[in-house]
Image 1 (cartoon, one colour):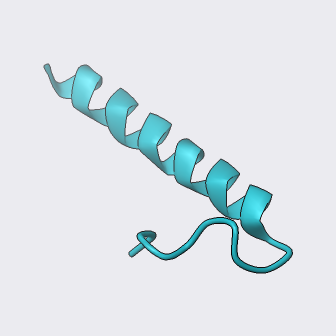
Image 2 (tube, rainbow, N blue to C red; image 1 turned 90 degrees about the vertical axis):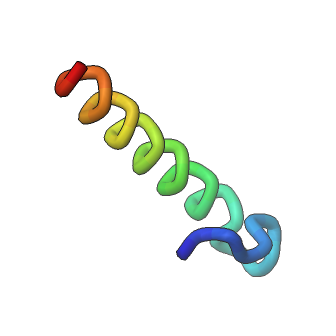
Image 3 (cartoon, rainbow, N blue to C red; image 1 turned 180 degrees about the vertical axis):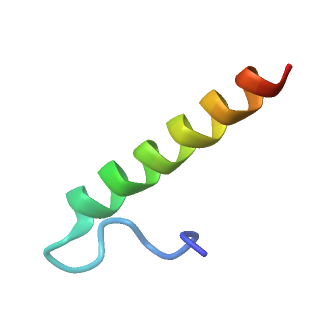
Length: 34
Protein backbone atom coordinates (compact mmCIF):
# COMPACT_ATOMS: atom_id res chain seq x y z
CA UNK A 1 0.00 0.00 0.00
CA UNK A 2 2.97 2.32 0.57
CA UNK A 3 5.05 1.55 -2.52
CA UNK A 4 4.39 4.92 -4.13
CA UNK A 5 7.07 7.59 -4.53
CA UNK A 6 8.06 8.87 -1.09
CA UNK A 7 9.57 12.17 -2.25
CA UNK A 8 6.57 13.20 -4.35
CA UNK A 9 4.66 16.15 -2.92
CA UNK A 10 5.20 18.14 0.28
CA UNK A 11 4.40 15.18 2.55
CA UNK A 12 7.41 13.10 1.50
CA UNK A 13 9.13 13.17 4.88
CA UNK A 14 5.87 12.33 6.65
CA UNK A 15 5.32 9.41 4.28
CA UNK A 16 8.76 8.03 5.15
CA UNK A 17 8.13 8.52 8.88
CA UNK A 18 4.75 6.80 8.65
CA UNK A 19 6.33 3.91 6.72
CA UNK A 20 9.10 3.50 9.30
CA UNK A 21 6.59 3.50 12.13
CA UNK A 22 4.54 0.78 10.41
CA UNK A 23 7.65 -1.33 9.84
CA UNK A 24 8.71 -0.96 13.49
CA UNK A 25 5.21 -1.94 14.64
CA UNK A 26 5.27 -5.00 12.36
CA UNK A 27 8.73 -6.05 13.54
CA UNK A 28 7.69 -5.67 17.18
CA UNK A 29 4.59 -7.78 16.59
CA UNK A 30 6.64 -10.50 14.88
CA UNK A 31 9.29 -10.56 17.62
CA UNK A 32 6.56 -10.76 20.28
CA UNK A 33 5.08 -13.89 18.73
CA UNK A 34 8.44 -15.65 18.40
